[in-house]
Structures are given as structure tokens and as C-alpha cells.
Amino acid sequence: MSSCPVPPRADAGLLEHYVKKILAAPVYDLAVRTPLQAAPALSALLGNQVLLKREDLQPTFSFKIRGAYNKLVQLTAEQKARGVVTASAGNHAQGVALAARELGIRARIVMPATTPELKVLGVRSRGGEAVLHGASFPFALAHALQLADACGYTFVSPFDDPDVIAGQGTVAMEILRQQQGPLDAIFVPVGGGGLIAGIAAYVKYLRPEVRIIGVEPEGSSCLLAALRAGERVVLPSVDGFADGTAVAQIGAFGFEICRQWVDEVIIVSNDQLCSAIKLIYDDTRSITEPSGALAVAGIRQYVSTRGIAGQTLVAVNSGANINFDSLRYVAERVVAQGAV
Ligand SMILES: *Cc1c(COP(=O)(O)O)cnc(C)c1O
Image (cartoon, rainbow, N blue to C red):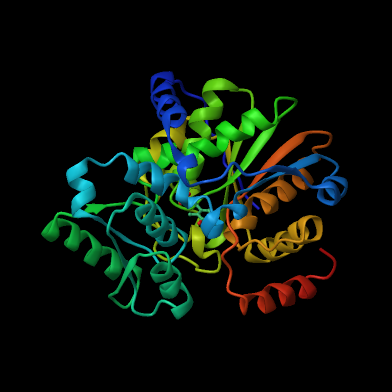
């Protein structure tokens, strides 16, 4: 529906800094090396070779444990002893809880009082202390920051932290090792920009010809807005359907990388996400959450609007945490659109 080419600029020193951090990130204490899997039906449908990076197969069912673990493992002994705090009702909450348990660190996770029981239990079952506070996310976040300040806990950002970005960047390290042949572009879902920043830093350092393409839902396209404005604008409102990427402002550390090294940002609708969930299901028999299907939706739009054929395109399937009840809505939207 819209896109924004980014003019290339060069700050290779920044890339090298991140590449070193990514190579040194000990994420495999907890995360797994996920498959880069062929998607034959999708590839035939789109006339390009599509490969799926299956981050939905991580423990906690999203890549977030990579960044959370890499952040927590690098804390000083004193910081570890004091514990950590974060605010999240989603995948970051599970990631921090699991990483903290693995490292024997106390984790308080502030969640809005309205958070569904399922997600609260998800945190508690992984050893995290769920603190219910505030009517919505900004209030929970304010409380988490206040706890960090008053009690000396380390605040763990879901995306705006170099160690978190480096942890997420290990996804790219695996992709380049797994696909040593042709590789034209990697499509990455964007929320606060931690995942795409880590991937862009690694790939642009080693294989700069590979295009890095961000994909955002139309209801929370904060990276595109920031690139257009030349600064990190705050969106006045955010749509929550793709809850893993419903972020109002791109992170500062991530933006520094994205504005120089992301080649393009594509925006997709919620209906396009529903179709993508079905296409992924058809090929893999696995269900992705709406944010997890962004990259496939982006590939589909990229290929059809530009008549691209015969390329090798990677989609990062970033997560699978969807409430079972929501599948009914997804299926209805697919049917309402006719053939996918
Ligand atoms: C967090 C998340 C994203 C976006 O990652 P950012 O680092 O915030 O850009 C994408 N997909 C899923 C499933 C997520 O949980």
C-alpha cells in the first residue's frame, strides 16, 4: 500500500560495533537455532523462492528470549542480585521471565490490570512475578520505571537497548549461515525496531547487497512515520490487532541503524495479515500470530506490486502467541476476502 525508500549512508563503525556484540551474544544457553524452512506452496504461488525463519519455534514461541537473555546475562553481579523489572503484556514478558529464571534473577513484570489471565499465568508459570498495575500499557510502563528507580531494579526494554538489539541480531547470523546461496531480501516485522536493527546491522556488514525490508501493520507504522519525518515521531494512536508490533514510537538505538541501513518499509493491512496467517498455515501447518505473519504479508505485497520473480526472499516468522479465540476472527476475514 505504501513504501519509503531510504537513501544509503555510511556509518560502518556502528555496524561493526553491533556485529561484534552479535557474535559474542551467548543466546544459545536458552534460545534454539531455528530452521530456515522452504515454503513450497507459497513459493509456487508467488513465483519466488520463499524461506521462513521459524522464530515461532523458540521456547516462549517468539524470538524475544534472544534479546532478553543477552541483556540479562551481561548484567553485573550486583544488578543480578537486585533483580530486573519490565512492563509488557506480551512476548517480551515471557522472554524476560524465562531468561531471568534461567539465570536465577528475580524478575518483576508489570502488566496492565486488564491483561488476560492467560498471559498473566504465562509469566507466573515461567517464574516471573506479575505485577498488575494501571488501566493500560503506558501506566504499567510508568510504574515499572518508578519501581526501577525506587528499588534499584534494572529496567529491561523490549527493544530500545543495544544488548537487546544484539540478541535479536543472532537471527541474522543464523540466516546467513543457513542460506549461503542466493539471497535477495530479508523481510522483518517491525514494532519498536529492535529485531530489524539487529538483523540490518549484521547483514549490511557482511552482505550489503541483501535488501533489508521492514514490514509494519498500517495501524502502528512508527518506523515509516519516523523515516518520513526524519525523527522519532510518536503516533497519536495505535491499533492493537498485531499486538506484538503495536508500538507508538520507534526505539532510539534501533532508529539510528534503521535510518541508514533499512532499504525499505512496507505497510500491510490487518486483512493482509489474516491472509498471510492462512498461507503460512497451508505450507507449515503452524499458526502464527498477526505480528508473526507480517513478513509473509510484506513479501506478497512486494512481489505483486513490482512484478518480482525468481528471487530468494526470507520472511522472519517472529511469533506464534495468538489466543485460540482470535483464530475465529482471522478465519472470518480470510473468508470475507474471498480466495487468498
Ligand atoms: C516484539 C515482536 C516483534 C517486533 O519486534 P521489535 O523488536 O519490537 O521491532 C515482531 N513480532 C513479534 C511476534 C514480536 O513479539
